[in-house]
Length: 192
Image (cartoon, rainbow, N blue to C red; front, side, top):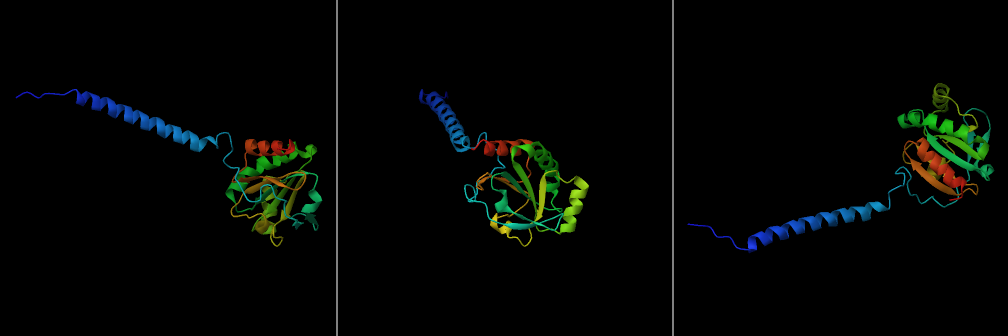
């Protein structure tokens, strides 16, 4: 007995191939549409309801001297405000980047403020004694100032870049890198 094939079987195979190719093309197209908005954007930059709002008016004690820093006194400067702690492993990794950037931008009207978050001042000082105190860098104690609540801190490190008018322009979660921090500062200095 012989098996007969019809012309319909080869056509079904071709149709099936075209359907698979079409589905693959459609899938790739959907991925491009979904992810296109994020290409070229540092994933550590996050949206926040604080972006575009005025930074909170705070008064925080300095870590290394018996004075206070008033954030209202920082108007006119670009401020990089970093929340950190001695017990935070990622804070240890990003510390050299922040210190180097504070030196690089010292003469460009950029002020660095390190806010010690949920930590003992003695431990914060020991951390800085070990890893280095930044020059032209203000270290303050966040505890009791309301800074963590006002900035909505939910995990550290978190870094904010605030423009000369006191408006929060950028929020970076996680470890800042030279690239992410420089890009954020340069964008704010350029007014964007």
